[in-house]
Length: 150
Image 1 (cartoon, rainbow, N blue to C red):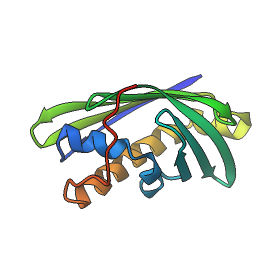
Image 2: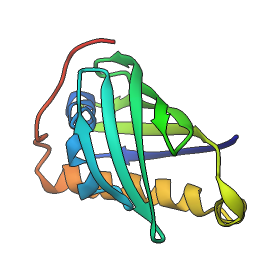
Image 3: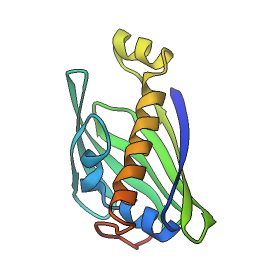
């Protein structure tokens, strides 16, 4: 397993950043390679990704969700093997640090080489940067929220 850890400061309150992150179906708008996510239940999502021409489908279950603090997940079915957590840290009333930690298992030679060259780390950093642009461009207005706890 490999691990990536990245963080970014966003110019929105913790509640806004967290609320937006719970809207999984919007992820394709800021995550490169994510084509579609379906929220099947409060705890189950179905992902379709396409990276460098390789399409993968998998299910992920939310293992822990605490409003304004964290969302943790692990894959349960499909081609990708990963687990992770995103946490939200209040910097002040209008700024939040979003930190993502993810463990994943590269498959095959191309993914292993890409992992060693830092491709996944750069992709995660880029996705967080696009999340920042996405939520800040909306004037700090999230597209929705799920405030339940898992």
